[in-house]
Image (cartoon, rainbow, N blue to C red; front, side, top):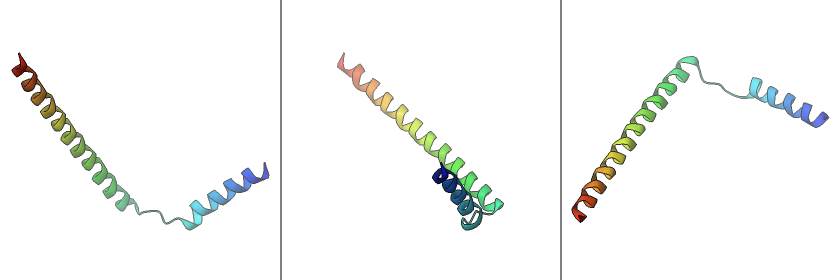
Length: 64
């Protein structure tokens, strides 16, 4: 049990005193970049999916 308590104390100490956290404005900027990149990637994947569906529908309609 003592090992678990020591682990949490060490973890708290490291997070509180040794980690360099980003400034608030840097955090906001990187969050916006991640959101925009996620939306662009989602749109790209959506477009690729629609293109594959269209190509397959044309291919299957030619088979008769």
